[in-house]
Image 1 (cartoon, rainbow, N blue to C red):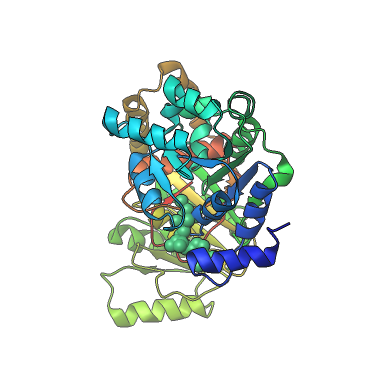
Image 2: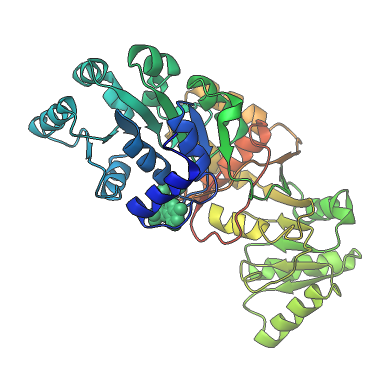
Length: 426
Ligand code: ADP
Ligand code: MG
């Protein structure tokens, strides 16, 4: 009862110096304090760490934080408020260093311990935490790594099942945190950790009105025209078509006009005056379609763009997300289509081989993702901000993710954050 909302806010002020909780935080902390295992999905930068930091301070036993990367552990340890004693165990440490940490752990001077998932294979570690040491909370950061459906799957996370944590190690509660949450991944995490649906906390202010689709392009401009003349694109009032090359935008815009679709091209090879003019015409609905390079869209304040079509691959996932994010700002269901081509198919193929996935899986994947003529329309499930340098900056990976998620029906909605200036992960 000490953990009333009011007291928690006081503690927040005292420990972190913040005046109020952000969305999801208070609920997560209260869950954890009540011994309820919880799944917390908030975008990167939303403040997930604070949830275990405050909980750790209040809970009687220690809090274990499982992180997939040593760099993340170091980072999190550094960000621990000074009043909370923390340490980490990593494979990068010397034997003496880790022995020292284990000793401190036994003596109860550590409140928060950061570990890798591999640590749960270490007998000494397991015997320390199961032998008389009360573990109040196990936090699984980047919890999507648990799911083999996840792009970031780490086999060592497989050990972290509810059965091990609750039965063998007698852990009070589990807090799984991630910014990545496709439906399949989410189900896998929650079932592995035995987290009931009622204990799922998710930021509700994410966009879910973009319908994404992909298809293999064969007859270039003709395929585009067919798409634009068929439902739902035929009914959409304002459309942006993104191309890679300036020449392409001119060519396609001419082709569309020849086929009774009013379009203008936009790229940095056009004079600033003309570009402003195109933007104005589009903004006031005098032209229906803008065929553009990446140069278009930055200052665009048009809420009713109903569709964004990628005629060629975007340069990165960030670019992709920004570009499709120009659709549906009015909240209405909007459509985003991406064409991929043979060149990309081969890139994806080699990527998959280079990642060491077995041949059967690759073939199965390819037959599912690239069957003759199949185009699917799915909705995609969650947008995640990640430090730009971290991962997924390869174009192929981006598209691979989008395609697999879409085609395998894993992902259903794309929740889009408006100002994303980092690489995004699906
Ligand atoms: P996440 O793990 O969700 O990506 P972090 O836990 O690293 O995000 O938090 C991101 C930043 O937000 C940190 O600098 C943190 O201090 C800050 N923050 C967290 N909660 C609050 C809050 N209630 N008020 C103000 N800032 C906060
Ligand atoms: Mg984090």
